[in-house]
Amino acid sequence: MSSDDRCAEALDRIRHGLAADRLAHAYLVVGPPRGVAREFVEQAIALLFCEGRTQPCGQCRNCELVRAHNHPDVVWVEPQSKLRTISIDA
Image (cartoon, rainbow, N blue to C red; front, side, top):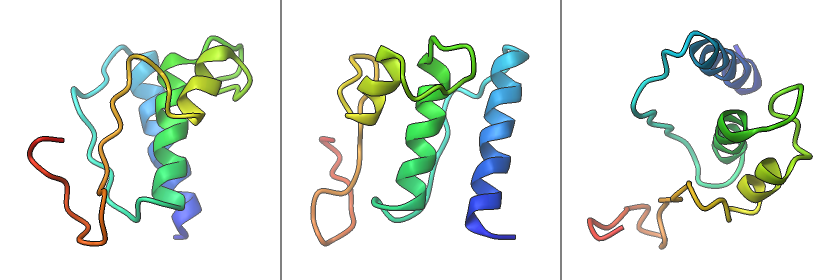
């Protein structure tokens, strides 16, 4: 199974959880801070805030804010150095 297939499956699970009003309180995504993991997280968060008919639409204001990492209800936590660690303060 390719990483794209796994991402699509995980996104579908989040979509079904949202539709059933049964989302988990947290999701841990493990992967490189750039690339597939980041794209998946952006899509999953956009799915939660999207105001479009097809979610995530990628075009509404909330989708744009998520993509730009400027949504007021989202805190982005990721490694800030080559050490690949996240400080306790973050």
